[in-house]
Amino acid sequence: MTDHPSKLSLISILSPPAAKDLDSEQFQTILRSHKREGLALAFWARTVALVFISAFLFFIVQWPVVLFPQLFLAAFFVVGWLQQRYGRVGRSRIELLLAFADIALLTAVVVIPNPLNPDDLPLPLQYHFDSFIYAFVMLAGVTLSLHWRTINLLGFGVPMIWLAAAAALWFFFQPLPHLTALADQMFGTRTDLNDLFDPNEINWDQRVQEALVYCLVALILGLNGMRGERLLLQFAEAERKRTNLSRYFSPNVTAELVRADDALSQSRTIPVAVMFVDIVGFTRFASGVSAAEAMETLRSFFARMERAVFAHHGTLDKYLGDGLMATFGTPVPGPDSAVNALRCGAAMQGAVEDWNRERAQRGLPPFRIGVGVHFGEVAFGNIGNSRLELAVIGDTVNVASRLESLTRELDATIAVSREVLEQAIAVAGLQDPCLAGFHPVGPRKVQGTSKWIEVAAVSRVPALPAAGT
Image (cartoon, rainbow, N blue to C red; front, side, top):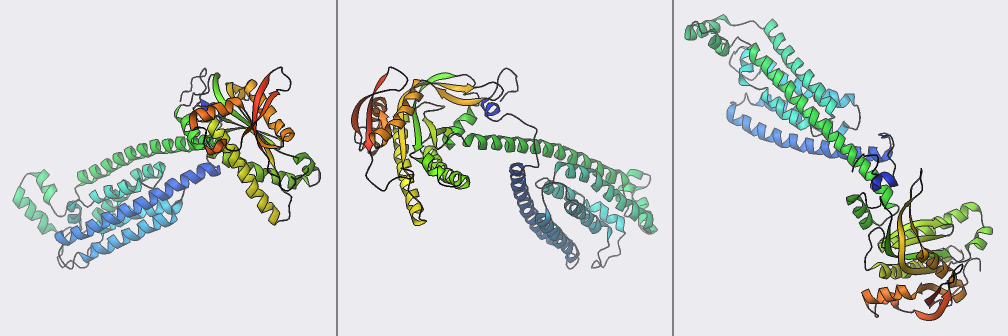
């Protein structure tokens, strides 16, 4: 899709871009779904990692000393469960506090002496075990569920906590001089080795290096999270526009339009089947009921007609009071257009029969519809200026409308032109069920023109009188 002003995409035409409203329910639904998925994935990734770390500790830490870090692993599991439980879209103080709780627990493992360890070891020695590498495992996990701003905040906050803990330990710890003396004896004037192996040393250069690398990694992951969020919002916007398209087109046609979003940038002439559907006698029915009841009746009727149109790969062109216009073969023409239109007409009649049975159970009068179908070339594209609208124009449309009107004169359920039947027979064969019941009724003049068309119809089976007739 391009933003070039001289080239409007289909999606831009049918759904003009507006300011992104992240508070809209549609956006929030997509974001919540993404968040829930991320939280669940992060929780299970954390659980698997904790199981592996727990098992690994049994190989490198003696019994019963290993029980102390195992308690912290259990606490990590609880924090992960709480993150999954209370995580939500948007800013969440609880979620942020739980993220910092992770690194606080990891820091506590290093700073708090293991009460189960019988050896009197200096606490700085625990920094020599490189426990901070596990902070990167946690950071990788939180990227699955936390907002990129939170990840960046962790990138600065976690190193601060880590260095603050080291500073507190350095300030309050009482060194064991004899251990430093042993290191001096071993390495002499090699102060670098003394600092590295002296159990009393914090090794500030390594601690600062750990904090710096963590900060850089968190910032990079945060940038990736920001990019992922942008892609997610673009996906949400595309889904919104796809939903708008689906109000006009069947799902397969919508997919085609999304794949080729400039399909309607230029009007073109294409062969299509045009259908008009109308409720017979609805005006008289509406005059005897409240406006609210008439509106609800139309909603119920259109819902059934829409399903039939979309189920047969049609496009809902427009509503026309108590009727509608649909096309088959737009925006992509195909050989099945006439067949789909005839099958749709039959499905509509069946849907109305089912609807009438439901209405009869509630003591309401039945309805009947008239359907007219013609096949031919139309001009297809967008019309209008400030407000663009998808439309089909041409004699084919006029003829289809006239055929629908003829159903009353012919007392027929559906009236079609010879062109429709010829196209359907060529594709589906004469024995196809969609052609059953049609009989010729001779040439008919198209109102408002000098044109005559050959018409075939399916006679209406005598039944209860329709509403308003």
